[in-house]
Amino acid sequence: MSLGFTSQLNDPDLDRVSAALLRAGQRARELARQTGTGIVVQIDGELRILQGAELDMPMEASDED
Image (cartoon, rainbow, N blue to C red; front, side, top):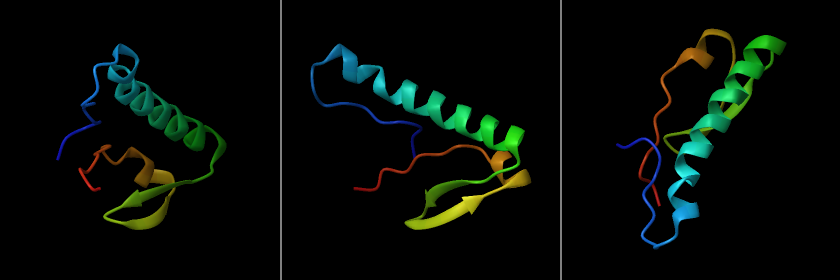
């Protein structure tokens, strides 16, 4: 399992997409903690709502296609 993805295309903008998506996910978790709400994520192909302490779970990305 790897965090983020690697583009097969020769495009410098796509090289920064992975980091931007990770930052967006981190910000969503911070906002959810501050507002006491949950966020919906896909884990092992299943949609889940993370709330409270679950928001502190390490972020992992899968190589699912």
